[in-house]
Length: 201
Image 1 (tube, rainbow, N blue to C red):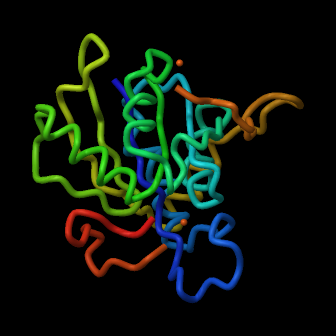
Image 2 (cartoon, rainbow, N blue to C red):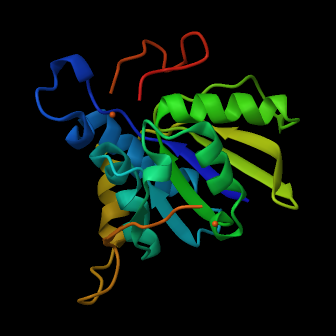
C-alpha cells in the first residue's frame, strides 16, 4: 500500500513572480495540508517522499511533523518526471507504506497508465489539489485504487491539531532530506477537477 498525494493549493501561478519551484502554498493550501493529518490518520506511514518543489514539501510537512518522519525529496516526483520513472518508483518495494507527493500532470499520467493496466478504482479518475489516491497491489503490481478527497480544515481545528505536536529533540525529524531517492509548480481549477485528463502542477 502507498499513498499518492497531489500538492495542496498554491495560489495562482500567473501571479507568482519568482521561480516556480519555490512557489508556496496559499492559506487554503496550508489548511488542506493540515487536513492530511485527519485524512490519513488511519494509515501506517513509514516514509514521506516529495517532489523538490516548495509546494509539495509544504503539503507533507505537517504530516512529517506529526509522524516524526523526514521528508525525502526526489526528482522522480518532480513536475517534469517521466511517467515510467514514477511508475518504477511506485513499484519499488521501498515505497511500500510511503506517502509520495507530486504534481497534477504526473498523477494524471500515472493514474491513466495504471487504469489502462487494470487498476480497479472506486470512482472516475480525478486528482484535485490536496487529494490522495490509496494504491495497493501484490507482486509489485498496483491493482486497486481508492480516492480520498482533500480535507481543508477550519482555523480552530488546525490550532487543535498543532497543539498536539511535540517539538522533536535536536537532530530529530521533521527535516528535509535532500535526495538521492531514485527507483533500482497553483493553477486555479474552478472545481479542482482535471481538464482534458490533466491539470496544472
